[in-house]
Image 1 (cartoon, protein in one colour):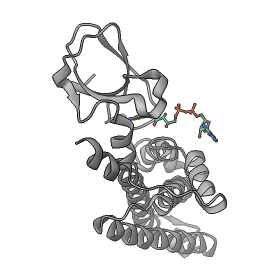
Image 2 (spheres, helix red, strand yellow):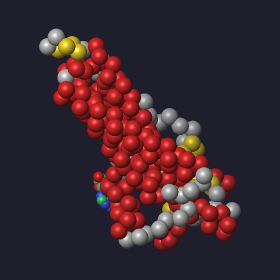
Image 3 (spheres, protein in one colour):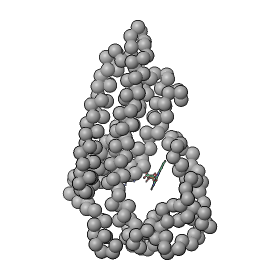
Image 4 (cartoon, protein in one colour):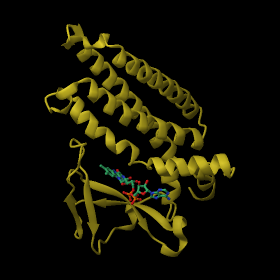
Length: 234
Ligand SMILES: Cc1cc2nc3c(=O)[nH]c(=O)nc-3n(C[C@H](O)[C@H](O)[C@H](O)COP(=O)(O)OP(=O)(O)OC[C@H]3O[C@@H](n4cnc5c(N)ncnc54)[C@H](O)[C@@H]3O)c2cc1C
């Protein structure tokens, strides 16, 4: 595993649920720490492993922030993580479209460039419109984030839409490459695989829908936990 240390969210008071989690910095070479490499569908440039801890003794000074405050720190960063994943999804969809357009301008079939076939042109038009819409939603949310607003509903929506759009874009763009789309020499094959994690990691699409539904249907409100924690204990 490629790391010198791990920041782990550990249960320091198991009965307290979310209020019993702390962040600890754990050195990779501490006795009892081990990792197994996971064989993934994509994202091979990113090292992912299953980490195990067996009676690891962690010095008190390795505690990050307040004891039992870990979940609130993580929660506070969720909106930014969702926004980053939304931006990543839309940017990769945009890149896939540009790459497909380049190929479609070179490849000829039945005596014409394939970018002249109406069936494909309309799909391109739909994709370009969806990417543009999602991109401007992300710009708006980046502005809100910059202003320090805690926008849970909209960031969850952006993560849901942006990562699902990326998956659809990869699927559709791969199709434009025909047989070459299935060949590793063309990077659209790798992009198709890499994109698949977007709707799973950082809160899956189902969890995003759960959050949005709670806010839209049940009028649940979320506010930054960090603000109150900061006052109370830091
Ligand atoms: C390559 C990779 C990198 C990762 N990197 C990190 C990382 O850096 N940090 C980190 O903390 N985690 C990381 N993860 C873990 C990732 O966040 C989880 O895999 C993801 O959140 C889904 O959780 P799970 O695997 O336990 O799926 P499960 O919770 O078992 O979900 C299985 C299915 O059930 C659905 N589901 C679960 N609960 C509900 C519900 N309440 N309502 C409706 N549907 C539900 C899920 O959406 C999913 O479709 C990584 C995972 C991968 C594959």
